[in-house]
Length: 337
Image (cartoon, rainbow, N blue to C red; front, side):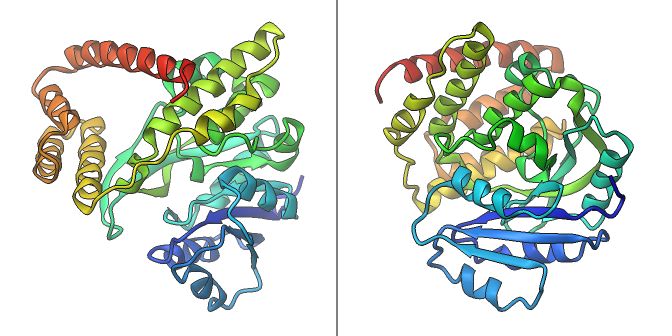
């Protein structure tokens, strides 16, 4: 292993013309020079491809799909094209800070047992304004059990992985058009153990909040449950429900949102980011803006209530809410929707 190993950055895109230049520039301006950027576009119709083609860099390899195949297919195309020993993910509306790749490759060089490295990250808004930072426990466990119970914490676009490790577990599974990251993390953790994940306690990535992403939440919850069920079935040596995933996912339509609904969801996400950062006043301010855009949405009202109680009580209430949501998701997963 050499400290100047080639890193292949894989970025799937689809209609990201508003942010694509900023995302690409953040990769091309990395302090670590030995990298390639593989962009897999799903047939954008908003000028994204034109903006990419206008960027003059021999580090960019653009692959345009004739027909959009979904994020897992795009990621696998990028991984197959990758010449590097390591694959870094990047989302087309996010920003990698200049030292990101350098810090991540440094960890992998120091600890060859690490197969996935990520970091703390910052939430940013529509205009790239800083909202708050997501600093989670860098020493927590990433066993399959803890990934399922506690979530993953880190942003999908912020990870760097060993290409060999990705290949060894079968890459992303294309039946998962959402929750593809959860499914991959579980299989990596099963194969290489919880100590193969490493979190750098430094903000190296900026994750953009978007109301449009909330429209996919129902589908994501249902498909996430399939990923969890698949883990338990592998553990028991039983056949996985993998063939059912795509059929179930396709039966759940992503909701088409009005402008007010998108704005309401955006302010809700901003408020939630502040809430998790223990900034109650800023959280309430954005939850109220969310309600003004969509008055009958109960979720920001629920979160406003939480901002007025102490942390211990918040945890108790949220645990109850989580259990109820989990039961609802299992019911949705069991039924044809």
